[in-house]
Amino acid sequence: MTKGILAVYPGSFDPPTNGHLDIVSRASCLFPKVIVAITKNASKKHIFPLDKRIDLFQKITKNLKNVEVACFSGLLVNYLEKINSFILIRGLRAISDFEYEFQMSLMNRKLNKKIETIFLMTDQAYTFISSSMVREIAMLGGNVADFVPDCVEKELKKYVIDLSRKSYTKQ
Ligand code: ADP
Image (cartoon, rainbow, N blue to C red; front, side, top):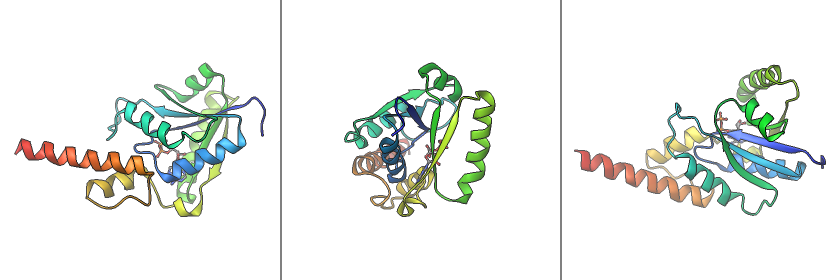
């Protein structure tokens, strides 16, 4: 284990999936402390508000004692400087993730040369899971039980029911 190093796993996690949980579990075995840093990006349209995403991530990581869930807005490099952490964790699913992640890690390092990005590969059972696909399937009434933890599945169901009620009352 790398002593005294705080690692940060950033993302929008809208919603958190089994793939995200797999990555944070792996990171928690490698670093003494891992912060899941959820983006508070007002310009991006999320289905779950920030407090819900924080709550869900806290629930799914409650057994990982060295994992903390936080949020940040603005530039990630500024947040890392503020909390004095220079290790970024990112998950890789397939080659298709690599180009974007590679570019971002080089950009982050250009912005702050102390930053190292560590890529962790997900279990192959989760390689095809993405938050956007889970959202789409859930919105169309599909079953997402194999892709997300139970508490996330419940919240997605609630979200879809609320949404259909709202559109029904609008008509
Ligand atoms: P973003 O940071 O683009 O908003 P996400 O919140 O979806 O993306 O994901 C955060 C991180 O988790 C990224 O590094 C992404 O590659 C990784 N990730 C997303 N889905 C999976 C998965 N199924 N398995 C492993 N890593 C994943």
